[in-house]
Length: 165
Image (cartoon, rainbow, N blue to C red; front, side, top):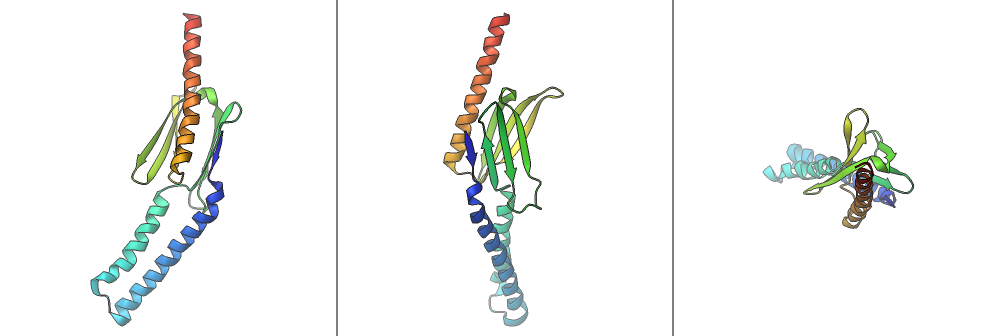
């Protein structure tokens, strides 16, 4: 199964540009109000607080582009930001049999995907992906696909235990 929200890059770029322009315009309006017009009083601080808060929420929500591919014998995860220099893009590929479990954590408008993968050195490794920009259907499809892989791995382990017991 393949899952990607790469087709929404233009929407996220437009939203980012709109938020940046709004923030700059509101800072200019705040400065003009404070030093020239003095028409708004204490409410003028909202001109800075509201757009800055929206911009911060946009960037704290995480990397915007998430791609998942479970075709073949490997799982492939990619997670990147629309602005390349803000965050280092994540790219992980590993065999399906190494997937132990996964967990999707959703707090307010933040969503994270935690993947536990078996490792030779440490026993297991947890990989973290930001999936805040996936819609509910995409998250459900991702869960369904990962459930299939985890179930197949557990069935294989149980079959192996029965054979060697």
